Length: 70
Image (cartoon, rainbow, N blue to C red; front, side, top):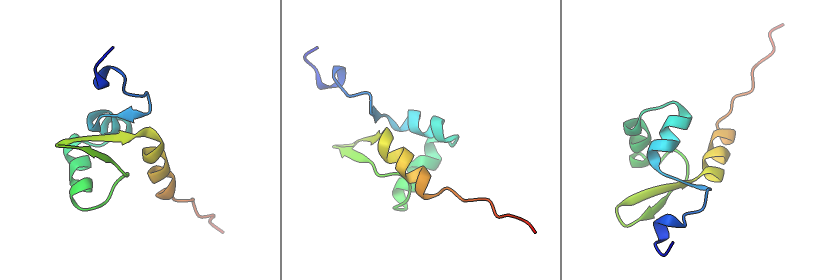
C-alpha cells in the first residue's frame, strides 16, 4: 500500500459515485461544478474528488421542508 490511491479515506468519492448517489448523470454533476454549484469538491490536478460529508451538507442545505396545507 505505497500508493496514495490505495490509501484514499472512505470519505473521499469519485464524481461517478456522487452522481449515482444523487440520482443524476455524471454530466449533470459536471455541469453543476462548471456553473459554480453543487457540492464542494477537491481538485487534484485534472482529477475531481468529493468528500461524502460535503455532499451530505450540500444536500441538507438544499432540502425543502414540505408546507402544511390548511
